[in-house]
Length: 176
View (cartoon, rainbow, N blue to C red):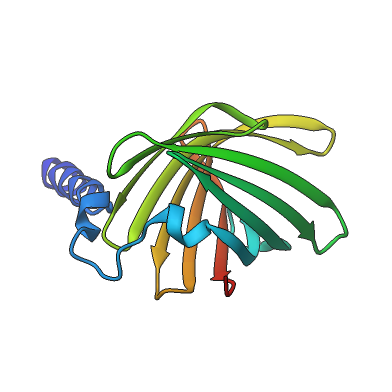
């Protein structure tokens, strides 16, 4: 019994030690500068999956980005496969060479982000309307620059520290 307990604790420690950290990506190229990538027009295609992995929704996003000083403004227009339309405007401020803060109307508090190498980690809490009620979900976005025009995004959505779904997006930067 004691061996099983020790083995279980060891496995749990190994799993906890395996999570990615932003500095793991520092040597990766090309370097992601979100102000540069999202300046101008960007398009994205994505899906929302439930906890079981079942695809729940698909969507397309058109994004217009504008940089003024230390602030990136992103105007996002979503069109979902069921016809629903949404809009969101992000105001993202660069607070140091690799750290960011952002706000939007459906974001609770302030989003925080950090960049390193080809990656950007963005964390925030968002109010989601579903089935007539509003849920506050915690988002952990990981963006990875593939090349000068393509970006992947994988997001975990959590409630009470339990993953309730994921969002996967593929961004294409339009010719400027």
